[in-house]
Amino acid sequence: MNATAARHLLSSVRAKAKSIVVKMSTFRGAKDLFGGIIVRSSEEPQERNQMEQLLKESLQVWSRTGIRGVWFEVEPACSEWIPVLVQNGFSFHHANPELSVLLKWLPSDEPCQVPSYAHTMVGAGAMVVNDKNEILVVQEKYYKRPHWKLPGGYVDPGESIQTAVKREVFEETGIKTEFVSLVAVRHLQSREKNPSARFGCSDIYFVAYLRPVEGSTEIKMCPRELSDACWMPIKEYATHPLAFEVGKIFATQLMAIADGDNPSISCLESIHQLTNSNSQIYLVEGKQSFKL
Image 1: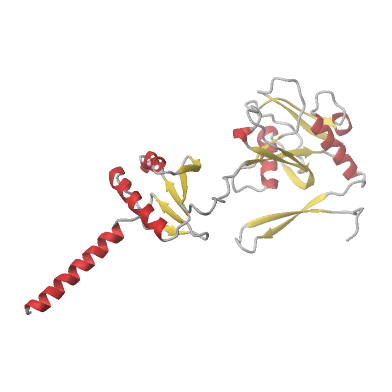
Image 2: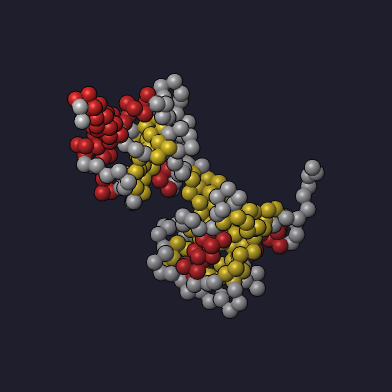
């Protein structure tokens, strides 16, 4: 090999080495649908000192190349990343026991329109009515004021309204039920410093009409959650002094549905076309007072 060829070869090797260094000097990440990038600590683990330098260089490159939102998904094993990210302008978007997600918006000429994380809790209450027209009501153990309320609770992640409300009834009272229809929906907006608001979130509460499955009417109360439970005539509950006002409204509505005065809300099971996920569509049935 002559001297000229050797110089060309050496130059080529140096160029490749430089290219490798450049590639390793930024986080790879994954592009999202909105011109942003997502970096996952599980896929690109780094020690804190290395991560800090890598982050600074990555932010410079991303700013030059028009990246909009930068997301870091940090697992607990890499939690030492979090103060570094905060020091470099990132803020928390959401977190759970497995993951902390931080965001930085890069464009200076475009407002950040990234939606806030989930801000509404979803609950489900049950109006379980037996063949004697009695409704299942409970008293919560830790609620100080005397009361009668509907059994129910919060919907778990990935759970449907129907599944959640039947599960809650069984956990609290031991009664197995079947879903008939929705009765009503209540939407409670969060208020600042309201101690009843869960984590400062608004609350949507679905009220379902259920029937006990055959042979399942004996109450087996959960002593951890309840102090009492009973079957009460629904007409009595609609005017009972210890029933919450909203519970009375629900009872009156259910009786109107049963009498045919108000339409019911049925459930149509479906599959979402885009996500291929299970989906429920709730439809108002019966004659309506308006025309299209």
